[in-house]
Image 1 (cartoon, rainbow, N blue to C red):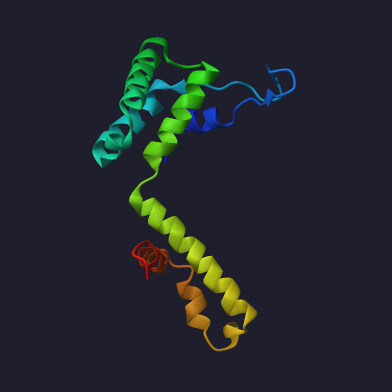
Image 2 (image 1 turned 90 degrees about the vertical axis):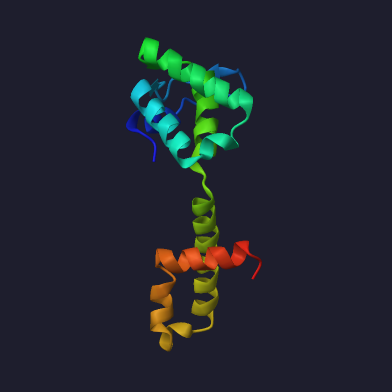
Length: 145
């Protein structure tokens, strides 16, 4: 989903809570313009842009402008804010339904394994791994069934 530069930015430095200093155990990473522009275009295309507040939209567009002029975003506070915005853009209703369906499929797998359903329902356990069945289970859970 995210570009290489943004994935690297997610591996942040750890802030030492006692002293309020940034530890140097992991290097600071930046978000490059190309990856940020790609996520911006994807958000416009998928209509997830409308889920952002006016402040978040402005921050993302200004960050895009800064990344274009400077080659990337290197400020730790700004990259953290951008990470939260990009996570919000990455969550679509389809991903949410698939996540809920996967949780339900795992719950069904545990219940059926504990009751010994492996012996007589081999195909059912194959179905629990299929994405289309997970989507079906997610739709059932979202719609209240």
